[in-house]
Amino acid sequence: MKVLAKAQREILKLAKSLSNSLGLKPIHFEVSASEAEARTGSLRTRRGVIETPVFMPIGTLGTVKGIRFEALEAEELDARIILGNTYHLWLRPGAETILACGGLHKFIGWDRALLTDSGGFQVWSLGDLRRITEEGTEFRSHVDGSLRFLSPEVSMQVQATLGSEIVMVLDECAPGDAEHEIARKSMLLTARWAARSRAAFDAMQMKGMDAGRTVSPEDLSGEQALFGIVQGASHMDLRRESLERSVEIGFDGYAIGGLSVGEEKSVMYDVVEHIAPLMPKDHPRYLMGVGTPEDLIECVARGVDMFDCVLPTRNGRTGQAFTSRGKLNIKNARYARDTRPLDDECACSVCRRHSRAYLRHLYATGEMLASILLTHHNLAFFLDTMRRVRQAIRSGDFTRFRQEFTVRINSGD
Ligand SMILES: [Zn+2]
Picture 1: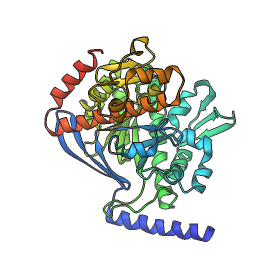
Picture 2: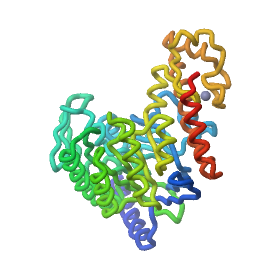
Picture 3: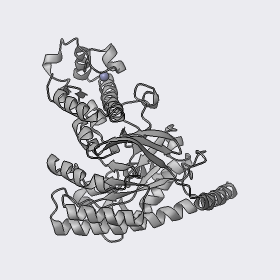
Picture 4: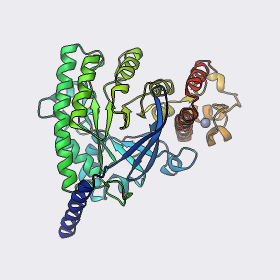
């Protein structure tokens, strides 16, 4: 077994030096149409093509909660990429277990593309349970209280073991309302961690530690891609500096982090409006952890290509549906005899078959099918909205689409 693993690593090393000499990249991104700052295109990975702008459902613990992979893959949703959370998977079932099961794709039974976050945001969210030093962050596991240590090197190692198509650098997130001095310190630490992430990532690709390696198109290198993250809270000069430092290091894509963490919505829109157009045009731009359907439209208009958010799945489990006329709370008594679908403009299988009255009954009686059906509809609504966004940009109709979408979603039921 050991000999085999060693031989495999040697082969990957050779493949790495060959792809380097051919100048191959792990992903290929191309913009096919744009309208003002909004753009549509395709992101080719070793596990399939992702049309952008794209919404990526979150699979925290190796599952997009409340929905089967078959449903995610079927034409109705056709999710091309989902997220995995490094922090959660690292604690449970643990990197060693996932490695023993052949990497995250094999472990969970998902053959399409995966993006993993760095674990930094979850550790940051632990608040007082963590201690940040130059070297990394020490924290107590929320699972068993054990003392853990997350550094750029550890994050890269865990993400190589998971074998995702897109790996995120470890960053440090300042609070949304952080003052300049605090935000600057945090941004500079992020920059130093980004350089360390890059070095550790490259070394691990060289050593063949990526467990997600698969047969990939010949014009791609077959390796994992690494994205940098722009921090700096609400301070534009810090955001610009963070972007410059990231581009200097050089990544396959660039993300805006540290938004949607309690700041005013207008602050988020301002940062995105200011920063996204400055990000390299020939690389994907990813806005982390955002947002509502309105946020997606508004940030596409500001130049963003990729999004992820727990809203469609988490809110589905608590009885909230997203519709073309705004949010609908299925717990509300007024739906008790409402025979209409959740959204009469939605073509998803839940809206074709079931009424609000039935969904409310399922929710009120604690049936697990309520969560499953609401999650399915919510994901269908988010993914279909992005499909329509891409179509609108392609046909030069995005400005009108955005106006009509905004009017309708605020019109109420
Ligand atoms: Zn629906």
